[in-house]
Image 1 (cartoon, rainbow, N blue to C red):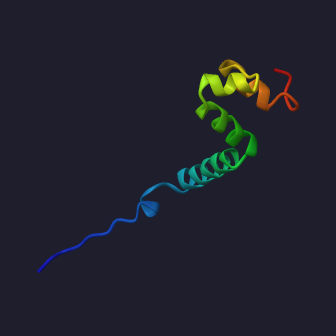
Image 2 (image 1 turned 45 degrees about the vertical axis):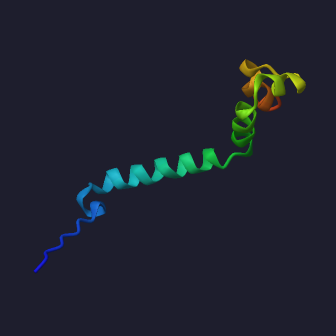
Image 3 (image 1 turned 90 degrees about the horizontal axis):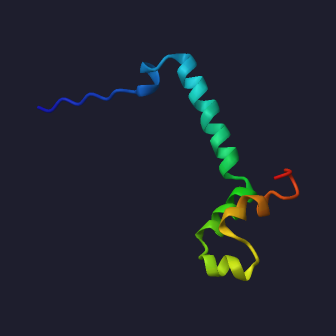
Length: 72
């Protein structure tokens, strides 16, 4: 006969910890869904030559993507 024990971690963590973890996960999800972040990631995957064709230096990617939102 086999014995199986399942432990639900949600009941073993304190309520406040679960709430804060949920809030943190939501903030991360919102940030990752930002189209500007996806644009930064796309540019970071490009080679230096590809960036140069677009007139962008690797160190200026974030400045390029957020130029109209933040004074960088």
